[in-house]
Image (cartoon, rainbow, N blue to C red; front, side, top):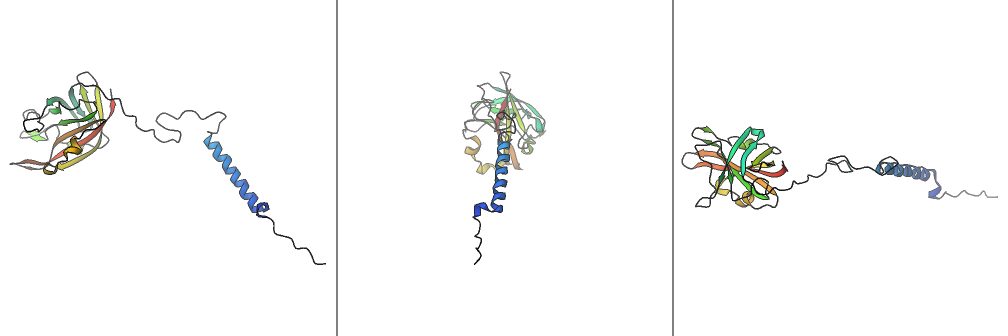
Length: 216
């Protein structure tokens, strides 16, 4: 009698398949336990400042402020705490500057947004005068992420966070990038920069770009 040959087992009955299936089931159960929080009830609310995945919650923009004239500008990282004077456009449609005999003043463009209002607010100040350094002598060194605080006549303060600092040649100054209208409250702080020539003055402008991140 010819002995019967044993046929090959179906793949779904092999030991390797059973082990693989068991491992997969364990993995699914472990994953479900993590997703469910590993307790008897539903997962609770995420911690303050985090979502359920543990990521930092997105920044919530502050509510813009109504109109109120600027009084003082503070840049803590540079030790600046300066009074503000209002400025308007001159006959040539150029923004004026604070008086040279008062180098510690900051000028705020009065016909633009006041601190905390939507749009692009503009503040300017001297880098130096013939008597020495002025209020914005160190403006080029303000670090991104630092604060600029603008106090108002109503007692409120608009707090801006610095996004970046740029130096632009005056003959290629990007007016739209610097002064262009914005929906959210933003601030531009300007002073002179580059090289100084006795006949023509400074060759460039330092521009700080910042946006509103808090009010108080």
